[in-house]
Image (tube, rainbow, N blue to C red; front, side, top):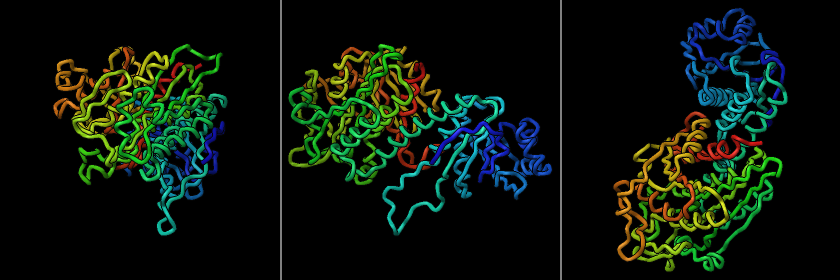
Length: 500
């Protein structure tokens, strides 16, 4: 799909669908929108009545398709609500809904008009970002017997505006394209079946991303992990034929924009989770290919840093393992020694994500980074507490949390800070080792975060438990059914908001 900017007037473009954003109700929509007034005149005043009859509310994400019957250059208009506030998330919801109905209507060429009151680069980025993300579909494995959805994807999406400087317009398109490509990469990885994407295949994909994106790449296998004393990740991956590994990617900014900051990202990447000997139910295993969404978010983020001119040095570490059952798999009651010497008493082999992160966080901290951010589909307790759309965030540093929260607010990814309650440390105090790998059901997301805190090596740290929003049971806005790529857009905003 081609994405372009056109400085022409939107009403002059001969496209299959022209998307017009509106924040007012049907009675006021035409009166408050210069573009709608022009289009209404071309339709001999019919548009005003159509909007009123359809009870068009202008609320975000509510589109109305209007056939122009040859009276306008565009074959159809898609009037889409963006809400009265018209903030960037409302814009995203409006353009996402419009893109979806445009595809359903068979549109192959789509033009996006910008709100008259906000014809800016950020608005153009939001429009393209949401439109493309809403059109995402994972169709890799549809065969000849079932070719997938009937409606074809559009060939081109064009932002059209006469007031936005073309250079700024193209820059907005380029930024949106980088964000969409990174998010799509994360979605694709999570949607891949576990028989295709095991730890070895993750390393291959990461090497390809590194080569394409100008990143340094290191794959740390079993022998090196043993030499490092990474007993936690080694134990988790021991039951699988595909050996565990740490995958280390480094982005170094050009000297002219380098900030001097060094940031570490760590992603849990359990390519399939049976629960090990603390085995899950059959139903509980159905979606367990998604247990690598944290690592997928890190890899997607790393892929876009060069395009977005990130000014910081960023280390992305992917902790890849498969939690399987075999004669060599780890067991409840085992004692593991992590890379920093902390001994871990295994109560549940199904609390494996925090084990791979333990070694991954220590390794990343020792690369000279100044702060750590980890992402993981870690606990069902976070989903119970916050639902399926909000990530739980735990942080040892108020300033770091505030920066992450601001990035989430800007991108529309919901984050909620949770407490690192000291009293719950008693739940993970070990009986025969330093700490237990689970503190039981009460406060489960908190005790998991307190476990991870032992491995931050004294650095400012934020832990994003994305178990809820990483995967959707139904489509919502610009988020598809299946993998959402949650976390990529927040991390990219965080890392590039003050870019050079």
